[in-house]
Image (cartoon, rainbow, N blue to C red):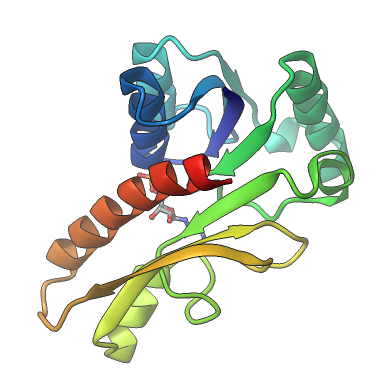
Length: 184
Ligand code: GAR
């Protein structure tokens, strides 16, 4: 049974998909920590509903990325976390976490990498006019949405409603994250 930490900065729908997967038995694991760098983000409410401990911090209150990552990595150590799942954690992972948890950190991205990395993968692909969208889960390295790809799923869409598209991609994300955690 894997001990999971989920990092998020926003709504946390992927956090919830993973936490629900663990609760229902669809994921062979348990979410032991939620890490959030945005006090007030909705993911914190979701974590409370699932009874998951939250480490919420404001990066501006630390002298450097290394300092706040040391605090995070110490917490991961104390909870004996096996796998870190980034789920809309909108920060590049720095040296401290890579040195201590490298190879055990994965990320989900709402596009078929290496196309459309960055914070607006869905919108960028939509504006480009692609006909096949998708989702990627990959190991994390020091680059933006870079690192070895673990799994991908295509989401064909030829419509013109970005909200409909976003909903389809999020559904695909939730399913792929659960499957991929089991596969690792
Ligand atoms: C997800 O679509 C995730 O793929 C994306 O942020 C969203 C978070 O949604 N991540 C990235 O764009 C990383 N570059 P959620 O908070 O509802 O899970």
